[in-house]
Length: 129
Image 1 (tube, one colour):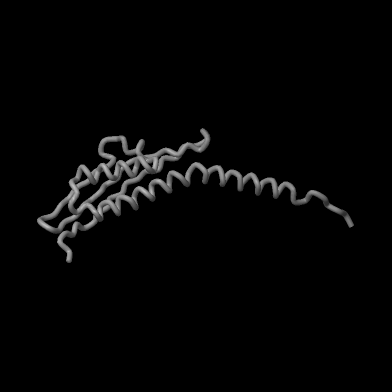
Image 2: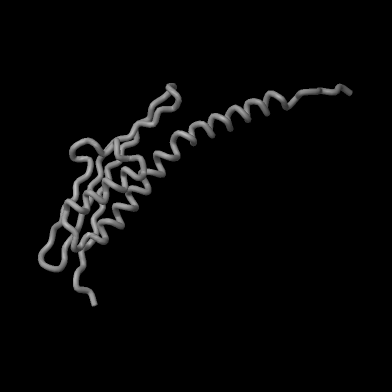
């Protein structure tokens, strides 16, 4: 009967390398995806409460939230944020449109461009008792 020593060492090393690579990719990608998700959620909340606010104030709130989340550089392009209100009298819609790109650099080996093209439209309801 032969004894085979070190049989699982190569598999263990490869597994650790793959796990390390996945961790390094997640370290770069997760903050970008999280920031985008949080900005979209914040825009949803801001649009919901935009009934008595002017468009300029709503746009400023979106930009402030983007700056807080570290997404503001991507929103520097003209037309990256667009806020519109439509309706008559006491009802209508507030629409926030986000169109921007963010590049994730994976340690100089690969670059991925995340494109965000989201339109959030919420009803404006006033005088609700």
